[in-house]
Image (cartoon, rainbow, N blue to C red; front, side, top):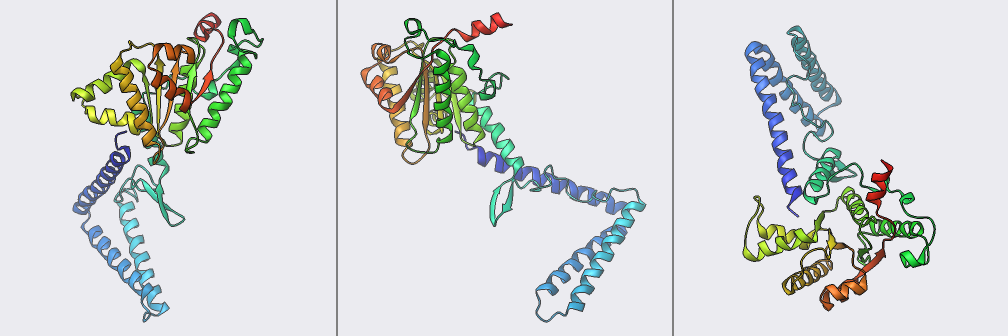
Length: 339
């Protein structure tokens, strides 16, 4: 993923510099109208320096310290009175930072350590969303999960499982929440969603992605049909939309959570088998020192996976992914009927 933190650090530095520059510009403007104010500001600065020095000096008496403090406070009151006399707001000469907490630094000190401010975290999350391909459609997320779209009665002949589709999806949801809660654990397996079209695989994968984003991790959602062109452009060194093919390919390997949707709908070939296997191997190697989980959603069960894909790929998925089966009716059709 592109270095979002470096980008934000630069943006915050520019924002802070701009606020300070504008404050200096306003000062010069006011000093021209009120020359006396410039003199008072200079005296306040000098008084502040003397006060600070007296505080750390072993030779300065408490009377001397108080004298410097009183002078500084007296000058500040003179400044405030002069501004009020000319109908100028008291904070007009100060930098107007967009965040009063961190003063546009992006970081605050907490328990002796530098930590991101809430304003920085908000922008960081926004940037993560932008590069994730997870579009906020107002209908995706665990808060929109509704098990009532899944039949409550078992039907083994129709769904090929012993329990009802509703019981099954509730178990799937539980496993997905466990995946989220243990995302940073190296022992947490990748996920393989399989089942008929419209049974909630994409919804569940994206809902997981949203929660992982909220936790501050990087996420990339791609359909299988859009995955292979990225790899091909990297092999041919073709840049697209201002993004280098090398960076786009690197994102596939290093992103904390890669969601690969609709596997099995793309035209297959030996070269694509090799590329997919290579990607899975690279992400596995990446996962040794870095969080690199993968979710694959497909209409293919394990039997069809072996039929459609190279045995090495099918074996890799079976061995390193936790399989979660989705069953039920086409929810998209049910929603249309409900409307």
